[in-house]
Amino acid sequence: MTDASWFVALFRRLTEGRLTPWVKHIPTVVTFAAALVVLACTRMPVASEPALAWSLVLEALATAAALLLPWHRLDVRWSILIPCATFVAIALLRLATGGGDSPFGALLIIPVIWVASEPGAWNPLIAGIGTCFALLVPEYLGGDAMPLWAIARDFLTPFVYIVAAVIINEVARRLREAAEERERVKDEFLGLVSHELRNPLTSVLGYLELLRVAPDPLTEAQRGYIDVAERNAKRLQHLVGDLLFTAQAGAGAFRLDEREIDLNDVVGQAVESAGPMAEEAGVQVRTELAASVALVADPERLGQAVDNLISNAIKFTPAGGTVTVATGADEDAVELSVRDSGIGIAREELEHLSERFYRASSATSHAIPGIGLGLTVVRSIVAAHGGTLHIDSELGRGTVFTVRLPRGR
Image 1 (cartoon, rainbow, N blue to C red):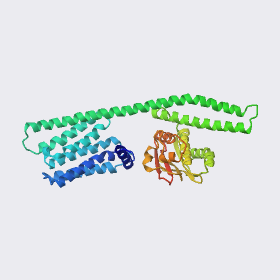
Image 2 (image 1 turned 90 degrees about the horizontal axis):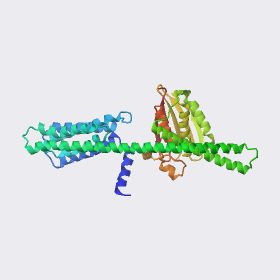
Image 3 (image 1 turned 90 degrees about the vertical axis):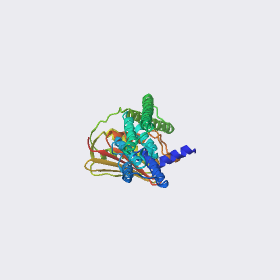
């Protein structure tokens, strides 16, 4: 493993692969701490202790906000206030340590990159205003007469930062567009392949059924061959259905046929359908159902999600294990949980489970069949209903999938 790949692996393990506001703020915390170490070790004179104190307080508040606020429930666009607070903190730090002669102007690079790389053409302007504030205010509050070269530097430096911010914003925009284009092409390809495969598979299944009812009796061996062919054809048909669904979901092209239903009815049908699979695997499927769990939803799509969760739990549970399907409700939402006693999933991989074609290392190491589409389908259906999917797991101790859906919309 190269040094770069080792660093990337460590970063993913520490951050669970998510680029949250806290993760974005870590470089600022590190560089700000380094600046304080330099300030203490060099015994640099402090011109204004209140300015230094307010700088530390403001940066501490920004750090607490990045770390503690529930950004998964907030509009992430508000997170841009964190680097804006850092601009002010740097301005106060420079004011306290010599103004224009302060060595801490380099700290601006980190918040400028953060702000400039966010979506939106206005962000380079925000980065430019923050840079001008942090660079110019400490100098002109100092009150000392400034030579011409210092004035030229004061106006040239923010200009360079603004140009850099514009370039970063444009590069980030093009990278996002390229990623979206790749996803669009992938969705079109999946949709095309799925449509081309669906008709031949339907034909194959139809002819297999005709062979079963043919006038000439079949031998037991021949019936066995037909059973194998039919089972594999149905497996391919299910796979094609998942491919087509994920392509439609990626393009926002599938619709819900919502009506008032009872979640217990959907769960009962899914458990019944999973019976043969569970029996073959030697896994017991149990239910813990609330008295009545009414909601407005698409029963077919919701049933597809429950089917995938139960079949996934059965696949990952060794013989002799159990899968428990439970329902519950409160005033605002209903809840479905599928809990298994299976092999579990590493915590650092949980965030990636609903990505298309992603397979956990525990699945590949145990040679569990699949291509990594089941949970993608589940998350898409749950999101379309306005709900959430939470996954909790630990290697060797099983997995719990919890779906929470609003009662009505």
